Image (tube, rainbow, N blue to C red):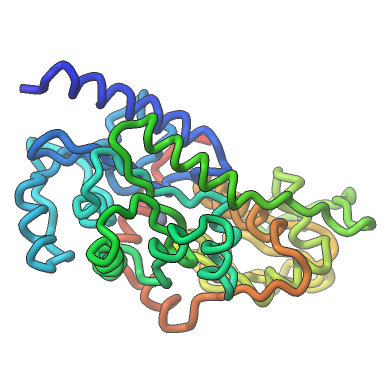
Length: 346
Ligand SMILES: [Zn+2]
């Protein structure tokens, strides 16, 4: 039986998730995950579901917290979480991470204001500068999400058991707290300390009138802001050289950007399953495949927000070939993408 206070907690977490999910600077599509603990039950977001839907749909799965605690204590971060009841959905791939954080409410988001710094080569120094000693003690170098990431976070907590803010390089942030208000205050504090004013595109860069070549299966991207990535010369050069910055970007948008000159269209775009979701047409704008998903558009918008927070000359840390490869051939991610394709939400 749930205690009345558990009902309140569940309700407040769900409504908090809906708020988080509605802010594209905090959550993009199916990204991010949230959990809360009720005794021996961990309620964690299901893989592939959207936090924005938390009040309208069942996006949380109850898992056996006792079993999870035991595996984590034994250093087994890959144990399959035991789902309680008849859940149709799989718990998040970050379930171990949520289980090992001792805090009652745990929020993991790819918040732009932090992410924009976590993709820089000097990420650790930046976190220390913005957050003080907390930024350094809670810093985790890039690890593949899931087992390896959970192991690295466990290492941080072993060294600093009071750490409630964990900054994941090339990924995002994890915040723990006693309740929603506590977590939110910490998260807001971090966002404020890390905030960077977004830059405007170069003076001459603006989206001109043009059309996608007919018959290619591509249409012009409806988001004019996203198009600036192909129009601003500095941003386009980031697209070419600083593409693979964090896991969701690679998983949803592919291992490399496809950049073409207008005169190279349409024959060189590719077709069928392998056709890229987006094509950057240098100096012109961005084309999107007709069947692009809402999750993919949200992901490219996230990249735009990250890129326009980088001053000229700032060096970014891109994921290496091996890291990209392991993200591309990952069953859990294929499952999550398949769910995203099924989402009708715009
Ligand atoms: Zn994540």
